[in-house]
Length: 163
Image (cartoon, rainbow, N blue to C red; front, side, top):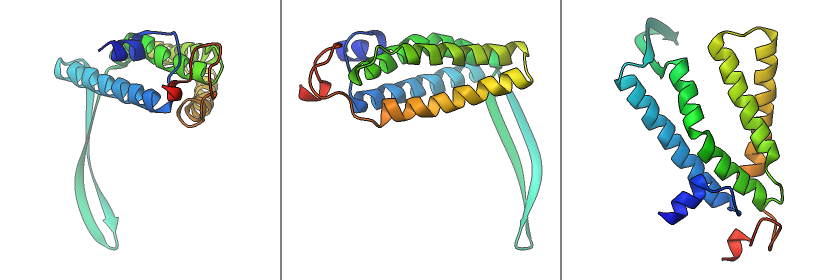
């Protein structure tokens, strides 16, 4: 339990890629559970559509259904999980020898873009912001999830793979 608390709540130290992906999985599950709970409690949006497709002359009818938490609930879930996300990502940046300020700036920009979408600020600004956030997310995905950390001790602690 202390290990899980360290992973999700502490900003000190370093974690390797395996622990990072474990944290991402836990946050994904938490998001899915909170979203399902919000839908179950009636804080969601649903949409169904009827249609058909024709492939090789064969018509197939279908009914599509989509359910998602309301934008307000989605934003609140993001706010609730921002602390654990930052704890995981900052420790991973520590493993690569960085303070993690880029992760904090990315997270703030991501929340800002969600807030803009929530209050209806749109157009070119939100599209440009969304593009910046998306590209930055890909860069962080590579840095946090795939690149090896600093070998040996660094300013943020001992090598997590040396334990």
